[in-house]
Image (cartoon, rainbow, N blue to C red; front, side, top):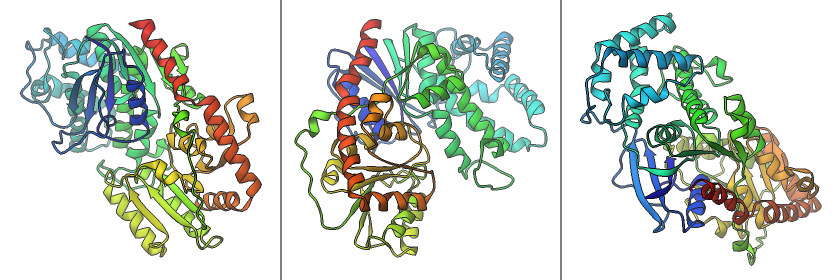
Length: 486
């Protein structure tokens, strides 16, 4: 018997990062709860290794692979005309933001009454006619060939999810919308358990940023991303598909948890019921840093902690470093995090460093034990295009390192305070515009130059982390919700 089944997409226990750290803290803090895990990944990978030691009270681990298509799994019966009509009705409802047909659609893929599988969905004349109908309504001057392959690309991973066997649990808890949110909603429909949803970052927004820069989606004209309305038909289609998945998760979730007020506002705008949404920020083990010792180096030490991926905008950090060196020529810069996720972007960053002649000034460390570097770093910088509530701000704050961050997610309130009493502590760093190397460099120079400002930010960070972000206090909120529903 599983008490809580966590549904995780591309994170714990195989990928390190802020969300994975939070999941591990959640599990390890609740030893009396019997957990299960459904892990969603693009493909199977026999070389994949655990990044965390899974506790003994995690009793179940299942993996769903979105692109390892299963054409051998068969439905229990042949589809009838009413089943095809159900698909049509449900899809038309999605266009009107109506999701009442979801349960009937799910029954077509789950259980003893299932009638659809990957084989008959992609070989059925009725489905072909239905696709043609939607193409005629929406395609306009769009190439049918491109339309067909996009339709297929969107629906194949959905088939993997819709046909997946989901374990029975009392509570299902997905840590994003998207495919994980769809699994959570399906689990509630099939097993009638409670469904909780936690969003660290807003999934639809993050996918939109990725899709806007994607080269694998066909476009007549390649254009730099400026606004969602400028995206091509096919990129818009992908964004809309992920938005529908988010709407389904919001509709079926019993409780929605998010990290800060800005996230809540976005969720409500996307259709989440504000009465369902509770703000519970992430936290840090403050006791762990009680005896933390700093090691001051003679020259400025500046680090960016994060994965080398485009959404972290490492290039802005590199360009800012070049500018800072005109004021502090002996400064040293570090990029602390793995670079294997987007290897092409990593090579672009390396090329930029070479072009700016910074090979001796910027170090890619790869995966590291972050506290080993916090001992001597003077500043931590975050240049992301999108964030939720970055754990790195808490790590830097609790040891008294001021931050320079872009104005994304919860960064501003984490540095300047959430409520009146929090704001009275003062700021623990400086906030800059997104994708602005000049502003980032100016903020770094200001903190390194103004000793009084540096000291004030250092003390405010320590006090804010202790008072408002202690992990024990915040995880107890989740434990209360679990216990009320078990």
